[in-house]
Length: 339
Figure: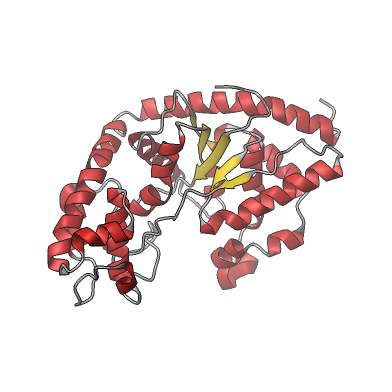
């Protein structure tokens, strides 16, 4: 692992350790993270500082951090070739975030749609951490001078802000190339996994109904039961993708089937088009169990030894600091701090 401060293919990405990793997390991010390891230097972070923008029970946060770490490891993240750690073990993230609090403008943060969505009508009672969350996200990325970030639709605005912060920092201190303008890494058409109970809502680990999602720790019987009881409509599956329009539940299940098989929707419908859901659901269950079953078993094995998970995270944090410490020393020098 290089500690150079300027590289050409360094990825940073983070995931909140809020427990209950779902099929949506796997298809939307984690599977892609594993694939990127062949072509990039990858730094993957459990962003526990971000998690506490909303109150977390301490024991649950520790348990969830280990569970999400186990999920990433079970999906093929290699902590020897790359870096896996939890954010709070590297204080450089928080220090750089404070500096960025003094660089970013209130108007920029006021435009962040995720704050509006999470704060809702209770904006005045939202934590200040939730408001400046995007500045910490920028620090996560730029503490490593990361060149690329894999992004979904809900994170594009935050990456644009990170680029704005980098550009303003470089301009304010007349260091035109100090921070890179990190590029988004678009990994083709994203698989947007929706609730098994409502095809118009995103699959969420916070949904009160466990039947609305497939958890990565679910066993074969639970996966099969959830798919069997998933909401559908009375029509047979179409033979072409256009036939899924206006049928959100059908589209969701076909999308899941296609993503798990690694094919496009048209190819998937070539296999299952014309089938009733009573025929299709067992096929989907078999595919889901074949992919997720081994992951869930490996997660359970890893969670039997939390000391080993903690060791991996601790080692990852040491390696992360080997990259960020010299960068933060440069930042302090640029800003004018006595060191």
